Amino acid sequence: MNTQQFGSALKDLGFDFYSGVPCSFLKYLINYAINECDYVMAANEGDAVATSAGAYLAGKKSVVLMQNSGLTNATSPLTSLNYSFKLPVLGFVSLRGEEGLNDEPQHELMGRITGNMLSSMEVEWEYLANDLNEAKEQLKRANQAIENNKTFFFVVKKGTFDEVTLKTQNISTTFAKELKHSDKEEVSPTRTEALTAISNWADNKTALLATTGKTGRELFEIEDKPNNLYMVGSMGCISSMALGLALADKSIKSVAIDGDGAALMRMGNFGTNGYYHPNNLLHILLDNSTHDSTGGQATISPNIDFATVAHATGYPVAIKVNTLDELKDELANWSSNPKATFIHLKIAKGSPKELGRPTIKPHEVKERLMNFLKN
Ligand SMILES: Cc1ncc(C[n+]2csc(CCOP(=O)(O)OP(=O)(O)O)c2C)c(N)n1
Image (tube, rainbow, N blue to C red):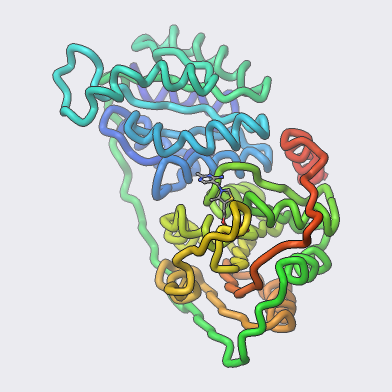
């Protein structure tokens, strides 16, 4: 079908924010998205889903594009972020390994189970038609699902889209990068102290997105506010989500509060965050060197200089702070001179003994945050 016209039909329905990882079956739709819309080059498909979900928080109808081999990577956010928070995205997944195609061996099994996988994840889906008029009818159904807060996927067979030439992509690199390591002694405050400082600092133009596990639970206990989001599941996705929000709404300060285990799980997103580096993105890593939420098992974080990694992956500002006062100073600095920034703070292991869980449901948190962002 005519890709340009299909893309325009998507745009007419309000879909103009894309993120994904390329597949040759989808290349012309991707070329269209890069040429004509906002397209975030994600490091992997799960990050693409999280970034699109973040953009949706700011009211953008968003699209993810992926090869079916990448559906596996996207499974964690599709099942625990989009599903739990009722955060819909429109997906296009290729059908590599379709029966009879004689495709590469690595696509054989995925080709057979792509539809079943989507159904198992309770994602509504259809094979995308070759005919534009038919496809436009399908888009209406997909749009209906999205408007009912349900993710919808199209499974795309080989040769569905006609050619769109990719315009030159200007890949810019970040210059004038700043890397700072505190020379003070490492104090390792508690997470409660660090989160209290962050929560007290956050004004009513700031969204605090807290990573899964005890970080979200503690933030909820410290102060439950409409500009907070407590991630459940989707481990490692918080900064990709914050990126989507920051790109989609420049008027909001989008703050990801990450954990070391989570950050390590999807570290490719450091590169994407660094590449796009919107001024309104702040990525704070509270590093207790453990998987605290699952019993305090060690992570490999003591071996990693996260600020240097963030610097090397393109964050304009990357800082290692060692005390609570330094954290507060850097938060204040960012408020007065916002640039995409990464802050690393070592914190103590452990949480308050009687730690509850958010009593508000994930989808209520989302609805509340979206209302907050609208006003
Ligand atoms: C994909 C995935 N694997 C494992 C888990 C189980 N899990 C939940 S929280 C957590 C630890 C996260 O560690 P970190 O980000 O350092 O935060 P902390 O628990 O220390 O606060 C793990 C392993 C999960 N939720 N998702």
